Length: 224
Image 1 (cartoon, one colour):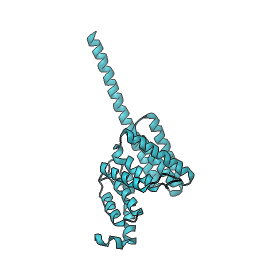
Image 2 (cartoon, one colour; image 1 turned 90 degrees about the horizontal axis):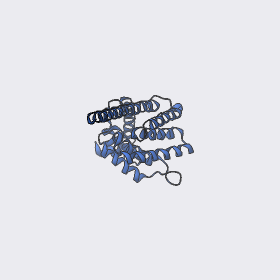
Image 3 (cartoon, rainbow, N blue to C red; image 1 turned 90 degrees about the vertical axis):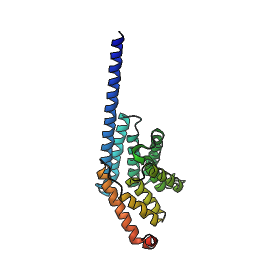
Image 4 (tube, rainbow, N blue to C red; image 1 turned 30 degrees about the vertical axis):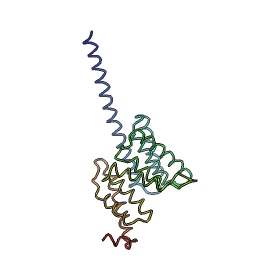
């Protein structure tokens, strides 16, 4: 009887372990697919067609959230897609989307703040930097910088934290410092499975770097 109960316990444990492994593999595949869909909408879709493309990514992320409840990956990607859709769409609907995106990211932070190599903090920083301030939105330059600093602490050599912090610095007129972080972004190692997103981000970084050097050479003179 003891051996039988022990065998049953082992079977149940093995079954739960395999199920957990299959679930982890499933959510990883779902998150990777969402990432590719987002990269296609961002870098391979004409500007006029981007809003519905991002909405489709939002829907895919929502499905993954329902299939893998409590998993941070789909939550973060839905927030990223909502922010992208808001940027493409504009108007009052965009404010609703960026508020939902922030709520999702704060929930994800409470579960695993370092998930997806600092993407939570990077996206929160971008939202606080780009969203209008009170009374229309929650934009806050000080909070934006703190979130970018957190993203860089989690992932100091990553292309996204360095690029978005550079964008933030350029918007503030700190072009010399922005160039430093753009160079860090361009030196970032390519991420396996994220080559499409990395290639697009590198093009953005190169464009921003060229624009700053062409339009603000006086501020960069001390660095040369």
